[in-house]
Length: 235
Image (cartoon, rainbow, N blue to C red; front, side, top):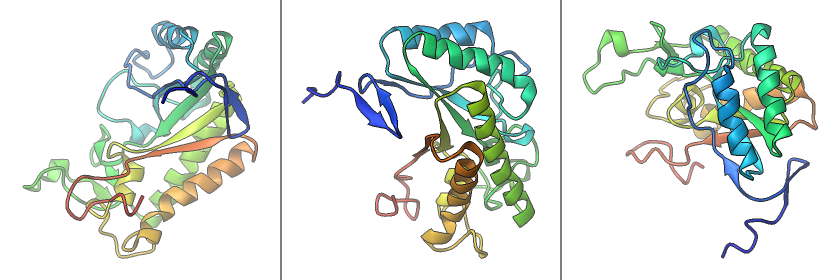
């Protein structure tokens, strides 16, 4: 059953020495301004040194309005963050692993008010204006798409080997995918092809910004586990 666990595998043109991956789990040890701290570097260095083939750094925000409400997360939306990100990517590789960073927009879970989302769907069964996001305009959607591309390009400049788009755990990409949080009636809502449009636009511009040889992965929730939500059939 586990005969291939320690065998190499090629992913997006990059050879991984085994099939063991450090998933992008929130660590919360960045500096308060979102720059990479020494504690963050030490944390990921230990994971790489343990024999992990691929280390995926935790979700890093693509814009000032994309941060979730949790403090001490990594940011990647300005060149000011490059020195720390470069050191982080380099340290992971020096310790024997392939380096990847996950980039995300929190959408309605952002720490700002009003937050942005595919639609103005409240967090709670009893709508509360303070917990109801603003439905994004076409212009705001285009801006968010561009922010993902800029973040991915910055990740490549920092020396990461690949990047992962965070479309899971209810964040903005997932909010567009799920019919529970996307009740739009324009080209970004309704049937599955339209709900996929935001993600596919991000994927295209991200690939354009980083070049065809730079791997771009996608993590998404395959099932909302709720009636009427995104389902395995959709996935």
